[in-house]
Amino acid sequence: MALSLYDASVANYLQTLGAVGGFLERGLKHFQENGVDPETIVEARLAPDMLPLRFQIISVAQHSHGAIEGVNSGEFRPPSSKTPYDYAGLQALVAQTREALSAWTPEAVNGLGGRDVVFHLGEHKLPFTAEDFLMSFSLPNFYFHATTAYDILRANGVPLGKRDFMGRMKMKK
Image (cartoon, rainbow, N blue to C red; front, side):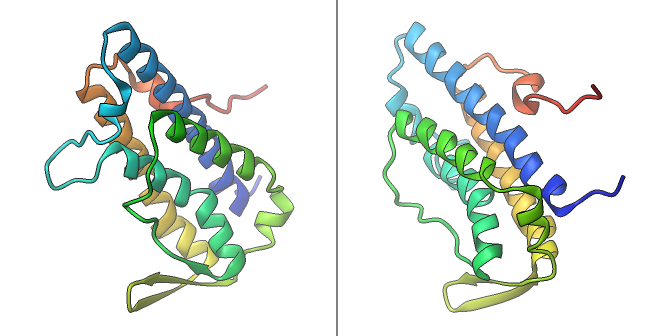
């Protein structure tokens, strides 16, 4: 069986988005049980020069659903670091992202192969093919931001493990 563009991108986005939604939920429960206002965690960072949890979750959405939409339109732009979300808003963003990605069929995503995509970063324009954009830019960014969000929650005491990050694996039936 050949690996398709859908399998390599959307299927993996959905698995990890499920995990992100799960560890955000575990984080909320932990914070509530320990008298921690989850809104303080929205701006938590691993290091002073890193962006906060809010931006990590926004980036997870942008580098998954936003990436597929970018390939479809031919243009991709990074997310704003100033978008206001509270903890519940971040959870809703993950759920909305999963729902929007679930609407993409394998045929539709596979049909995007070979298209040109331009990544706009300020005045810079970086040209990609759909496959190169998704595999060499979007997926690495997606996993980086999902991992960083996980790490921020871990650093703030949420009892998470590797299985929480991996999400529901695709096993042989």
